[in-house]
Length: 219
Image 1 (cartoon, rainbow, N blue to C red):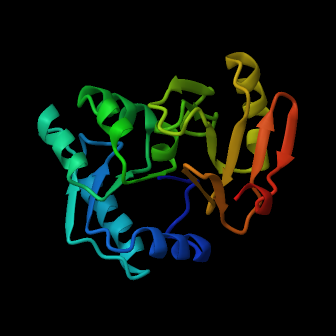
Image 2 (cartoon, rainbow, N blue to C red):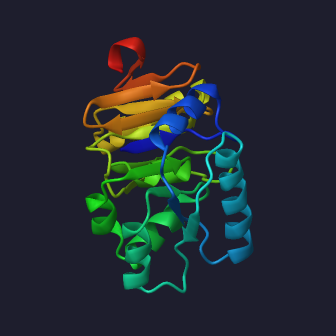
């Protein structure tokens, strides 16, 4: 089961309820960072992310993070032994390089428990890692993701200001559609299909076309 989170600080009510149900009896979590070279930053945001879970009554007995000191075997072992994998936010470019360097693509593809990606982490696990132009990225960037989403692509931190960039990306890279996830929204992907979680509007962006998602109809 895959969760793609659009961003935000903490989990809003609908996502809280979802996680309380889905993560019940899950005892271990492993984090995959975006800035593995900065240990202080990694630890800081790991504590922040864990606090979001503890705030809604979810506490993990075993917590680990894949870091630069891990060799390929130890990094893969952390994934195999975890009930939950959490791909952190930040820079998806460095995260994808880190995943590649540790040869985690196949391990993650074969993983059968719960994977959560927030912001950059959500982009990394889609078919295409789609980065829209902003203050951090002077140009739109599209990279190959590790495609844990059965071909689904998303935009995170979505606002209407992303539309023109998304249209350009779709045209240039011949992408069929992109699901736009608002800041506090999330998408769950499993064998039953897609579920949209959150009270804000979700959109499907296609070539020159923007459609609001019928949340009730696509659960």
